[in-house]
Image 1: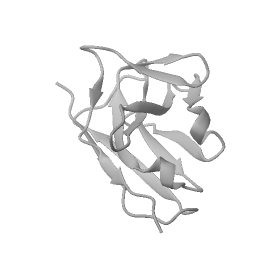
Image 2: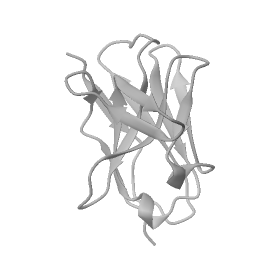
Image 3: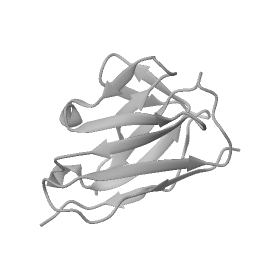
Image 4: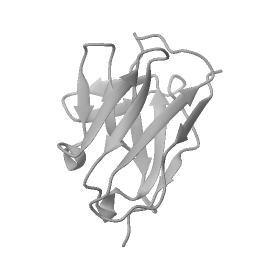
Length: 127
């Protein structure tokens, strides 16, 4: 079973930047889509950004478009997430996820019994 871990989250002021990283217990095939989801307090987990194989599609949630950038560790096919101009509404636990589906241009979807994710890294955005 794939194990996933996230790092890079910490308290940041509005307007600040963070870069999140993802590690896995083994390399992931570049045929498998991966990305980042987040869960705000009291809300359901939502897709933030996800990507298919190298040179393939990239999706961003409307709320983060133009501020967040997803990229890839080509050695392990794991995603990074560069987050700029952070807002209080970006606060949440951010999860790296592998084995997801891209839908349309702004949606990332988990697949039951196929998607793996870690425990997440906390990103509090507050002054």
